[in-house]
Image (cartoon, rainbow, N blue to C red):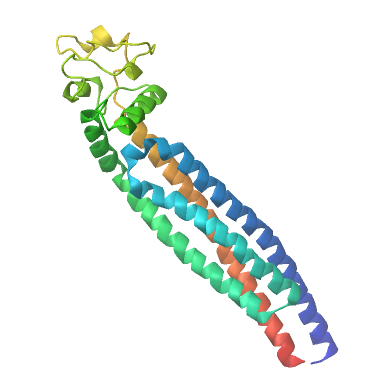
Length: 256
């Protein structure tokens, strides 16, 4: 190998090394973002478990797992760049590729779940209505009270859904969490068929929770999906850098 070619190759390797270091920093931040996002989603939506079902919570758990794996993978990228190790940089590239496949699968699952949100939530809400304040269904009761209070809504489709509730139909009442001013027994008798919506609209929220809750969930799922796409694009760049560095390192040793 002549001197000019060696100097040129050394500069090329050094340049790619710096780029790979920069990428690993971005990648580590992305991993942290995944862990935080997954944890926040798990925390925020855990109180809505009775409406969403277990399938919804697989995605945030996967985000946390992938985020932790990313931190481990950055070790191979940094060490491979520092030591100019062909083996470690190739391992780094392969692991990034595997993570990309996992994220692709998670993205497809999230998209499929996004299209099923309405059906899942509607079914679980209707079941929850029947079990409101039924002994042994305290979780359902708490979920209904939280969502009606926070989203300022009442029932699934509208407030008249509470006429079908096992514990509310005898008194034609709605839960106190439906009330504009939440006080004890404020919803008593307000689901009476003889009362029109105009009669009760100044006392309770009359619009249903289904559409509002679905919109909130779909919006957040879309945000998570967008973050996944951005991180996946960063990973593709990282794979390219790692492969280029590995190729240059191997070529350097073969020509010595």
